[in-house]
Length: 168
Image 1 (spheres, helix red, strand yellow):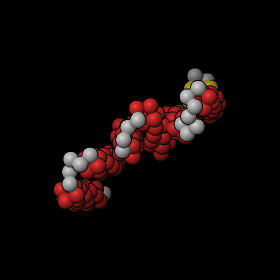
Image 2 (image 1 turned 120 degrees about the vertical axis):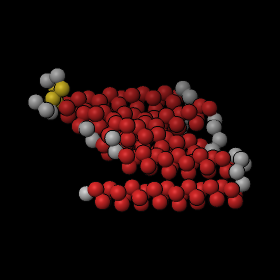
Image 3 (image 1 turned 180 degrees about the vertical axis):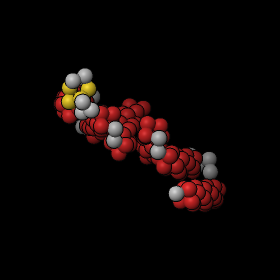
Image 4 (image 1 turned 90 degrees about the vertical axis):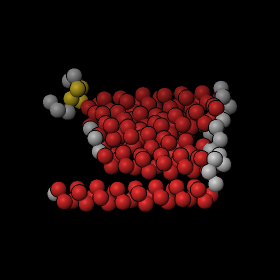
């Protein structure tokens, strides 16, 4: 009985999660419209609950793509809430951090190092861009550091890829 958990089919559990997430999405969307008077928060609520649905699918059926997509949508929804309530500047860098965290979490759960490499490049790109927007780095220093990082990252990836092909 690989398709069952405690005697219940996995697809039935996933369908139950779907209806619970739909009900919660509807409740929080209406709550944000009528109580907070925010007509744009529905998107982040939708992202969050769709991400939870994908994470449930990932756990039940051991799918790495659903794991990444679930973490990405959940973190995007969470960052959207935080940006709305705190009023942060340079919001797009926080969304880049969400992409990086989704890759790190997926790497931890699925043991795929490609996600870790992607997380590093997205995080460093976002961090350097954030420092440039805060006027900590001028354009010449930003481009010098960023292009050097990209070159070193590309060389490391080529070396690791060559070692991987050589092992096979």
